[in-house]
Length: 331
Image 1: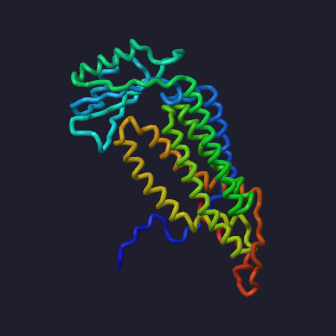
Image 2: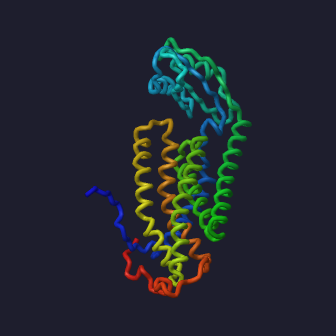
Image 3: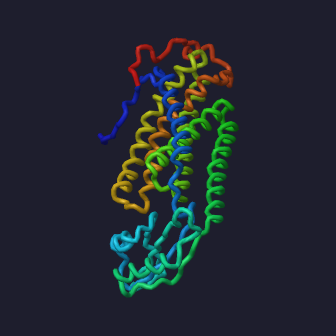
């Protein structure tokens, strides 16, 4: 007999909506707190949004990111990102890296004196290093990137809400969009609270969170719609509990396996991708929570259509009006 791993029993009867007002209230407070933190602290924009200079380096010796960072630390340059560039066309003696330096507060760009100091510090580490190109990103381009990033997030939210509306009902679309706004807003609030660097990779993480969260929400919505047609006389609250319990195993397995990989990247991935991985990790946790306690609460309060199909008088399930969650354990 084959071994089958079960993180969740086949039949669970957890009453997820026993504390629905408390959980939704906590979510509301966290959203309002995130807005306050965003206004008070602001986001710690990276080079992509603040402007700065990118120095491309090339050397016959292997790139030592830690040594490069240690050499630049005494210069007090602020936000510095060092990444090694890999390309299959590079030769064995062609080791390329990019050093990105954020513009200082009040400055239009990194000064030539600062660039010269950076190049001198890196040459102390590796005398064979050369600097094939130096590129600067001004504040105007950075402003356009911020605007484009906002448009990208808003466009994804609108497109998802239209998809949910067409696939289900408008109540489901409202619940889904509130859930997604909840996820994005709280994630940005955490970034503002802890002043984690916010750049284009973080925008990519936010879009990933939106896609992951809506996927989990749609799975439960699909099961809810099936149960609405199957159990026509049961209260909507009980059907939502039933739907969440029936998809709980899938939710735990999907989120759990994803988190295993993300936590490994968060611990071992290094500083370059830490902000990106943290955003996705936190987003998956908050997205799983919101798909149950935010999206479903909104749909529950708005009510849904119950007459997609005629009831079958021969099926006792369609006439049963007893809650399957009486005496359920607290979730």
